[in-house]
Amino acid sequence: MRKQAEQAAPQQERQSQIRYETALQTLGRSQCLSCERSLSRSDGQLPNFCMHWGLQIHCDCPRCNHHHLSFFPYCPACGLAASTAES
Image 1 (tube, helix red, strand yellow):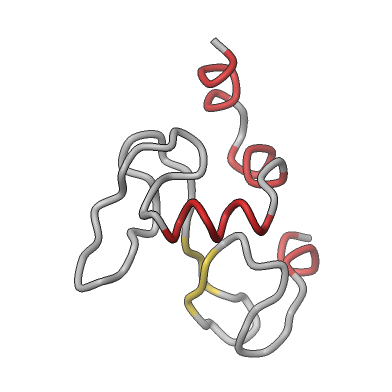
Image 2 (tube, one colour):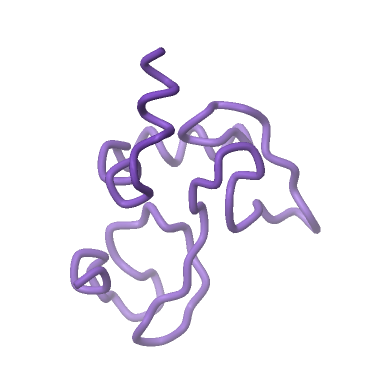
């Protein structure tokens, strides 16, 4: 029941509840951070969204357009803070 309620929450709320270190460990095992199911890799890359529950995994920086994990607190290419990008 708890997982179903968590997965029904809006995307931004779900992402804000996941700790950065937990995100890196879980994605390192090719698992979704929300439903913990396996993610299929394509050419060695994780998908942009979980195919099971739709959680966003990758995003593009609005400043430099660098494609990176959506759980990074800062863009690894230009340093834009994720909180800045959301506003």
